[in-house]
Length: 201
Image (cartoon, rainbow, N blue to C red):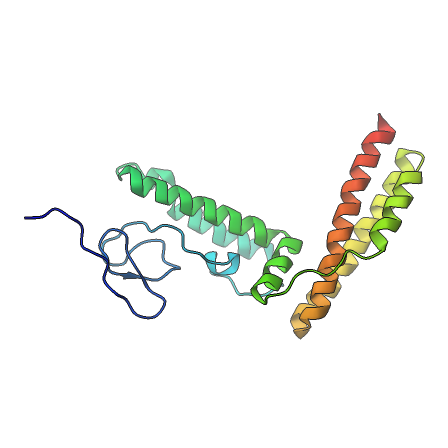
């Protein structure tokens, strides 16, 4: 009698074959419902990976709760008695969950992910980035740099509120423009940190 594992069988809809038993498995499933084997991570966006709504306005606690739940299910201790292949797949699933959580916990990355799902790219950073960089370059001391950095931070807050509104209204072109500007502000914030280090040296 052959000891070969069952060959994958054709499945309907978005189901794919379990690597072990060949039965149909949803791409969102961590385990095969037929044999219980952990599955390799499917090609899912961050929202689907954590089973969260595909929208910009997400509570941090909801993201963390979902990620924590998946990590608990995929805890290495649960796979101590499993073979190396299943252990490796569980580790890949944990890594995928961590990557998805990192994207969704960062508002700018979350916005970029939403744009990508709609086939859009962020707009240009705009001239304000150069203006911030000039202000930072001429800031003579740490106090002056901190003042500029505080204004950059305030601008980020304003842009994020506008971005939330744009996504809620379904104005993706406006959202793309705002994401581009936020990326510029992010670079300006990084420049402020560098300038702060330089003037404090």
